[in-house]
Structures are given as C-alpha cells and as structure tokens.
Image (cartoon, rainbow, N blue to C red; front, side):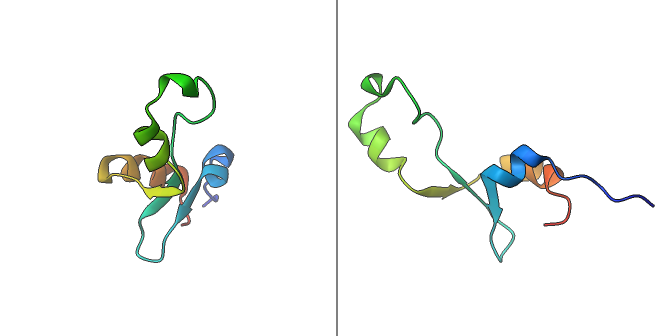
Length: 65
C-alpha cells in the first residue's frame, strides 16, 4: 500500500509532544495589532496546546506523528 502524504503546511506550523498533544503558535499576531488589547497580545506569546477538537483535525494532516 502506498504511503500517506503529510500536509507540508501543517508540518511547518505544528509540533507533536511526547504525550501526543499538538503545540502551535498563537494566531492573530501578524498585523493590526493596534486593535488588539495588551492582555491578548501578552497572553499570545510563546506556544500553546490545541484543543481536542482541533487536535483531531491536525492529526489527520500529520499521519505518521
């Protein structure tokens, strides 16, 4: 049987932890930052763990992770 292809956009944006959770960077930080509150910008620094519903979607894009 043929191998499954990984979505190349997903492999650049997501990492899988050893327990199987998905890490990603925060969204909405590229432009129009004057509209966003300081609290939102501060809490969006670094990486975060995706929710369970989003994890199911991303794991389909990363078949061998």
